[in-house]
Each structure stands twice: as structure tokens, then as C-alpha cells.
Image (cartoon, rainbow over all chains, first blue to last red; front, side):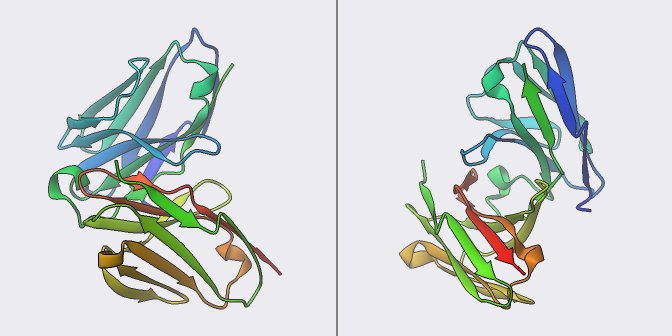
Length: 118
Length: 106
């Protein structure tokens, strides 16, 4: 138990569906992250939020839309996805954003949502 | 961007053996972390180690920042050590290596 929870754990959706992934951290951290882990590719940092403001968007397609309503919750809204978007989506949090503080900061990961797009 | 290379890509050990995993990176960094991802996908931070040496039980890590590499040592390996070990480095971002997949056999 890392103090970061994600729901759902598994999700199957069609290309025309709209769904959302949810992440919640119980650690009192100020920064939250979305990562994508595809088969046979390194983890890719998608979005970074620091104090509820987005500070990084690594050229992620607009069919992925993040939302951070408060420092404890992070969502990833999905719409019109492609089969190649199938992956494990990981949420993480840290005390401060590693992009602002430049470290040192330990990231705590949630268990991930395994997404399959048909 | 910074390139991160991990070796070996796969490692199979007998329980009780020791191992060394390596992470090379292409530029100076102020953040380096080692993670373990268990077979169920959970990532756990092992070390934050941009330089120097740290130890935690059977695990230890050393980073030689001037030579741009880090080593993760696992001693007296156990089956629960199986999984993928990732190195992540960066300055204002985090780049992950492809990982070393470790299998420890009983």
C-alpha cells in the first residue's frame, strides 16, 4: 500500500466511448503525475500537476484530457481512443513537483489501470 | 533528451544469489531513482540516489554521477525480488530506462 489508489483497475472500452480514470493520494502531497506504460516501451511521463496546476504536458494527444480538482485527486478523461492507446496507466504523487523543485523527491505510484481499447 | 540504458535486459537467478544491475545515462542529472515493479504492475520506489551510496536491507545502490552510471545491488536474492527494475533519471523531467526483468527461481 503506497497511499495512492487508482480506479478502475481494469477498463475495456471501444474507440467511441468516453471514460475517466481516477487517482487519489492520501499522502498530503502537492504534485501528481500520469504515466503511460506500453508493452516493450519505457514508462512515459504524460502530465504533471503541481498545486493543482498543470506544469507539464509531454506532447500528449488531445484525446487524453487531465483534470486535477484538488491536490488529492487526479483524473484522466479519455475519448475517441485508438487501439494503440492500450496500456497500463499509472498515477504517482510526490511532496513537491520534481519539475519545479528539481528533486530530491520520491514518487509514490498507484497500482495502475490496465486499459484495453477495442 | 537524456538517454537511459539499463543492463542486462533480463536476468535469471537462483534464490540466494547476488546480482548487479546497471543504469547508464547520457547527461548529467540531479535526480536518479530506482524502482521495482512487481509482477502485478505495482511500482515501488527503492532509492533516490543522484550520487553516492545507499543501503536498505539486502539492496544497495551506488551512483557515480561524474561517470554517468548507477548500480543496484541485490544480495541473497529471494523469489519476491522478481519483477522489473527501472532506473529513472532527469533534471526537470523523468526519463525511465527500459528496465531489467529479474526472475528469481526457488
